[in-house]
Amino acid sequence: MEATITRFNFTLLNKEAAAELAKHVGLRRDWMRVKKSEIISMLSSFPVERLLAACREMPDFFDEEDIDNLTADVPEDELKEMAAEEEAPATAPAPEAPAKNTLAALIAATPAARAATPAPAAPAAPAAPDVGTVAALLAQLLATGTKSLNPDDVREIVGPMLDEQAGRLGDVCREVIAEAVKGIPPKEIRITIGDMTHNVSGVQHKHFERLLKMCAARGYDGHRLNVWMFGPPGTGKTTAARNVAKAVGLPFHCNGSLASKYELIGFIDAHGVCHNPEFRKAWEHGGVYLFDEIDGSDPKAVVAFNAALANGIMAFPDGMVERHADCVVIAAANTTGLGATAEFNGRLKLDAATLDRFMFLEWPIDEALERVLVPAHMAGWVEIVQGFRRKVARAGVRGVMVTPRATLYGASLLAAGMSIDEVKAAVLRKGMNDDQWAALA
Image 1: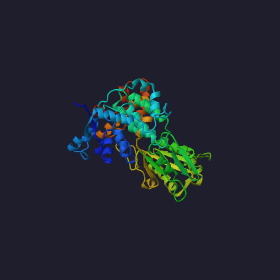
Image 2: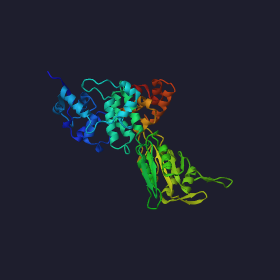
Image 3: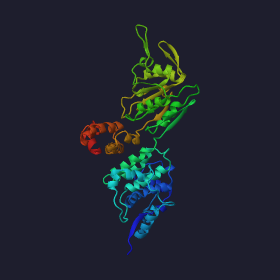
Image 4: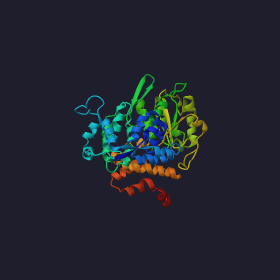
């Protein structure tokens, strides 16, 4: 009797079903920009059982009859021939030495990969993605154009596959990825302001490009528009404002929450000396001014902002001063200024006229950025934090926040020699009661 191997029948999937299936097995990507053939190539790395289980979770796309038709028995000899055809060169023989930046060269150059790569064996039912599969996927991605490929995109796609293989080959795959993305230029953001073009490279928050464009925009009066960034603590709002200043070549100024308008406009002391705060410096001479924790400020103090932000002229203790053409105002907050919430019960409701002076930009947690902020060997800790964050969200626990600071602080404590349980208690449990912790942990 001829031996057969069960394979998943991808020919029955349209692009929408393939994209939904990819989401259900944990692949994260902007699927609108990915061809169906590429999605199927990624899915083919997963075991048939895993794909069928995901299909059963998608009743809107597949019923039981569909699921029965999604597998096909392929003779083992035919499978060998298919594999040989896929591995054979399409035109000319392979070069004697692999190109420097190909995945084959990277794997060959990686000691752990050489040690872990098994000897050729007879085909068997796929169990989990291996080094070769991940390398092939990366090679395909890199071939699409390294200049526009963001290394985070590679990690987003391949990461879930590595998680399933973390025991035997996961470390090798991570090493291959780390080597591969070294050859990919970081995503570059280009913004034109007036006659000058500014380039920003390096790892940034996923909404940084949007923030930069908002800060570069000008109103009808020629002044910069004002931006209100709101989101959880620890998401890098202050860092983003500083990076805006670096990107456009302007000095950076900031202050925290205000209790008095004089912290904003300054004052003249008993000796007749005018003391100018950070806001005055940016207003008069240009620069990026960050009003941090604006929703924690006295609303009466913030109202002093109103005339300045709308009219481009401000009354300071020593006279009227017009707004500099390159004064960029950014307000950072945890709320939208409409008052306290369960998580931020110390926030105050600000005047509607103040809020009307701003464009609003939500600044959520960027988990891709969070992953690259800690060393690669701390990847397991990042997964723990992000998994716990999802548990808190699903459970609807009020007043508990798991921000990227838990990732950063925990990585530092682990590096200092603390146990994983001690670190969890310090940065995840914090003040939770026993019932809350038992339900989540």
